[in-house]
Length: 398
Image (cartoon, rainbow, N blue to C red):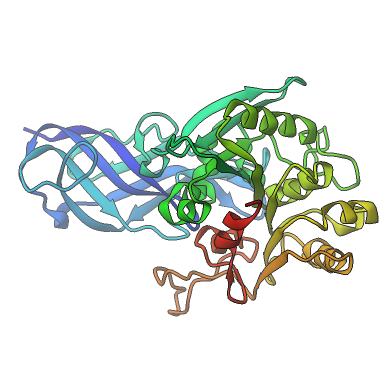
């Protein structure tokens, strides 16, 4: 009798974004053992086939198999026969992503189609990665919801809530980068490994915090016609985002209104600056990362309005997407000259893999695009001398 089955993939959020790490195959009959020598997995998905033009097409890649075994329905290895088998596959910054970045919309989406062809078995290759044909263990702590503002703008959002212990807790707000707009907050959580903010190390530094991850429909720097804001005109989201945040705080009475922290990367770093410039006395601290707010558009009065605020800036010198000499660098200088006393900066020479897992072809340490300095923040690797950024953030407003 031939083995037939369907698949459900396990997706994890890594430093470089989401990755399909396992496929769990539900079979029509019990399987006792698996011969890895006869296994082969071909990944087939829509992707960008010409990076210079943004042309999209179907990409086929043979996935490296690490292990294969009988399992339970969640992909956990079992030492008995089972109706389930799991195949573990190698992942890397260039292999295994179920996302595609569309040049036309400037948004990440789940690949459709996404297929895994399994040799030697009649297994349906089609996988609804966007829908319920996936497991994302890192999302289990999070809830998804939406908020419609008075002006009609609808924000999808993800939230993490600490255990109700009759105590006040800080609120940490994360604002996503360019590609993570839309209506699916799981894209925000996985694309930049924002899930780290709900994990034990970060939560310990915060002494248990709410985490709110709003998602705008387009991009934070939207000038109203879908183009990048390049002048002093406000983002179309400024007013309604604040309305949403303030409403969220009021609807969760155990949030400490004196400990509301806001930050984000790139487009979200821009929006972090936009929010603290417009509402300088609402936020207890800010942590903009590779932020895109041009210093030339900040007035001296605006600099004075935020010089009291604790702010931690992060960027890398190899960032060729955002020019830090026009954004972070001059803003820090002006804040310090204005008398700011709680300004910290983590400046990195480049952005490289610090896990030891990924190498270049010549064996050297893998280097990411220099814009990706949020990787250091997510891994708790931002410091200013002996001062740690996560620990510093958790101390603000106390």
